[in-house]
Image (cartoon, rainbow over all chains, first blue to last red; front, side, top):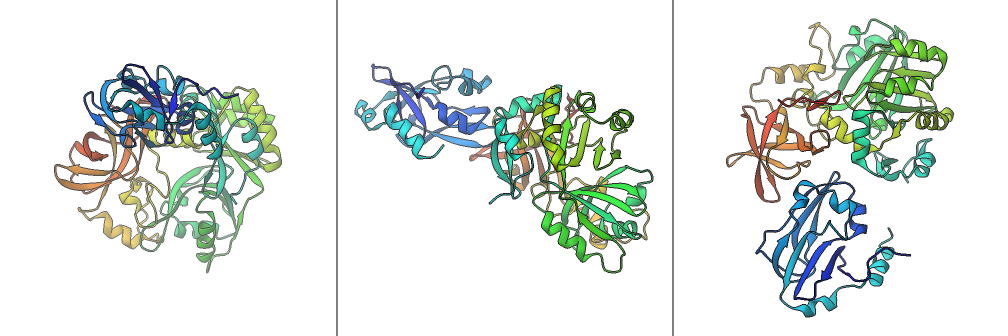
Length: 131
Length: 362
C-alpha cells in the first residue's frame, strides 16, 4: 500500500503540488525524491516575486552526495518560500509532503494542474523507473 | 559485473545501499550518511575496506626495492609493525597511487593500495622488480575492516583474541601487530583514533557481526568520504593522480629528500619542481557564503581564474561546506567560488579541518 498522498498532484520530475483552491499552490519534492537524494544539507529557494515556468528549474536541493535541480510543476509567481529550510534542510527528509514544502505559487492558469499526475499515476511512474 | 567483498550479503542484510566503487559493489550508507559520520566522530563506526588490496613484498631485497619505488623512505621504519604513508610516483613525478607500507622484518614489508588502482599498481610493482630479489603477493585471502572513533579501540579489542587484546591495548599510533593471519594496525582514514584490521576472509562476517554486538555502527563510503575530507586526507584519483605531483597535492610532507643520494622514481622531476616558485599550491577552503562546494568548481580572485576544487562537500561536524583545491601560487586569504553562475566567497585555510572530533578552524 502506497503512502503517496491522494490529495496531491505530481510532476514526472518528482515534485508534488497541493492545489490550495484559491488560485495558489504549494510545491515540494516527493518522499521518493528525498529518499534518492539522501541527507539534505542545503536548499536554494526562489525569490518571492520571481516568475516561474512549468518545467523550468527554480530551486536547488543539495544532499551530502550531490546537487539536484527542482522544477516548478506550474507557471506563475512565487508568493512565499519556506525560509525555515535555510537552517533545517533536513525537514525535507523528515517530512517531504508536509513541513518540508518549498514554495508557493500564484497560478497563471489553474488549467495547468490537469496535466499533472495523480498519486496512482505517480506511483506507477516510480515503479516503472525501477526504484 | 562489479566485484563483491566477503561482507556483501551482510551489508545487504543490514540495509546497506550498494553502489559501484572502484570496480566493487560497496555500501554507500545504511540509512543516513550523516548519522554514520557523527557516530564515528562521537563513538565508534566500522567500514568494510576489503576492496582495498593488501600486498606482501618478501625477499632479501624488498627494502632497497621499496626505497627506489616510493617517494617516502622505508629506511625510517626500524621497528616491527611500524607504518609509513607514501606516494608511488611515475618518472614524471605524477602519483601512480598512495599507500601505507608496514615494516614486518628486513625481508618482509606489507602495503595497502587503493581498490580502483590495484591492477595498475600490481603491474607497476612487477615492472620495477628488475634487478631486485623479491616476490610480490596480493593477499586476496584477507578481508579488511576499519573500526574508527573515540571508543573504537575499546569496543574492537573486546572482540579479539587474547594475544591481540593484550598487545593491541599498548599499540602506538601508526603501528601494527600480528597474530597468525590477523593484522591489527592503529591507523585510519577518518581523523579519529581506531584500528584497521586485516583478517582471514572466512572470519570477516562473524567478526563484523561481533563488532555490531559491541555497539560499533556499520558505516558506508559516504561517511568515509566526509570524514576523510574533514580530516584533511587526500583521495586518490580526485585530489591527485598521474598528472599531478605530491608537491602540488599537499603531500610534500610525505616525500623524503634525505639522504640526497637515495634515487627514487620521479625524484629528478620533483627536485626541479621543489624550487619552482610558480608551482601550484594545494589548499583548504571553507565556504563563508551559502551553498555547497563540489569537485571541479572554479575559483577566482576578482576576474582572474586561479584554480579548481579537487574535492569538496558538506562537513557534518562543522555544519559548513569545505573543500581541497589546487590553485596558482600567490593566493591570498580569501577567494571566490563559482556556484551555478554565482560567485560565493570562501576562506583559505590549512587542512585538517577536524581532528579527534574538534574543529581546527580558528
